[in-house]
Amino acid sequence: MAYVGRFAPSPTGPLHFGSLVAALASWMDARQAGGRWLLRMEDLDSPRVIPGAADAILRQLESMGLAWDGPVVYQSARLERYRDALGKLQGQVYPCGCTRKELEDSALAIDGSRIYPGTCRSGLAPGKTARAVRLRTGAEPIRFSDRVQGEMRQSVEREIGDFVLLRADGVFAYQLAVVVDDAAQGVTDVVRGADLLDSTARQILLQRLLGAATPRYLHVPVATSAAGEKLSKQTRAADAGPGEIAAALEFLGMNAPAGLPPGELLPWAVRAWEPTRIPRTRALAAPA
Image (cartoon, rainbow, N blue to C red; front, side, top):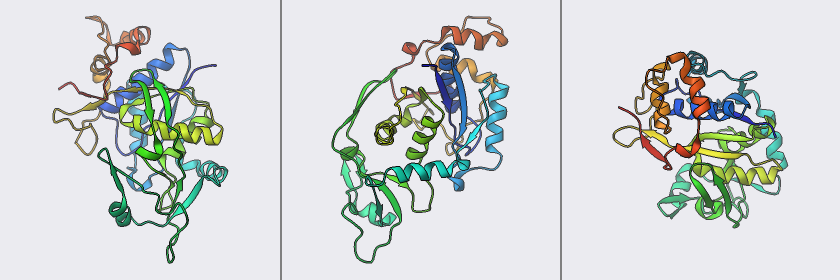
């Protein structure tokens, strides 16, 4: 099967070093395999979308030589696909009438996480109206092999609970949208940050229920600040530029030859790309 990879940023601000690492790893993996590298803007959560951020991301990728294949896909233009997928899950989903406060008060604490206790599984309580739509999960654990992080196992029912597919504000949830889009675009390989590792079991569950193929997964370490915080706009992470490509490669366990001209850096990186060199950890401090 021909390789199809993708990079799917949220346009909540320009790319920073952490998002550059994910983009670069995904691009190198696709290019070394002789495959296609698609670009998808995950702009469903409109209150968080920053005007102009999507165009800024495109300019950053172009300036760094990370060219994509085909037109850019915007999730905000694909709502009908998500609605159709939700319809295919009838019998597996149910309406939830819990408010945010009720969820906070009733959530079960398991291993430090708060798990939805299934309050509305058997139907809405009298006087309640549907707010969100949740997926009814099962007890069978999801197992998958990550190309960096190794063998993974998660019981979605016990560790996550019945999760939301359509939010109370009418926005389709990330977990549903990403599965629908990856299937529609024929994505065979997902390379992304390890902050999304815990989402993978939910996505595999949805893939199985929707009859979609499961891609291979590779989760690179999340770049953190010296204080251990994930780099983000909230932590005032600086915008990424071409001058940070060498540092991003080093973060991924690759040391470019000394004196290599800038124009030869990316071709060298594609030839030298080897995921086994990536540190097997979920988080790693970004270079100062």
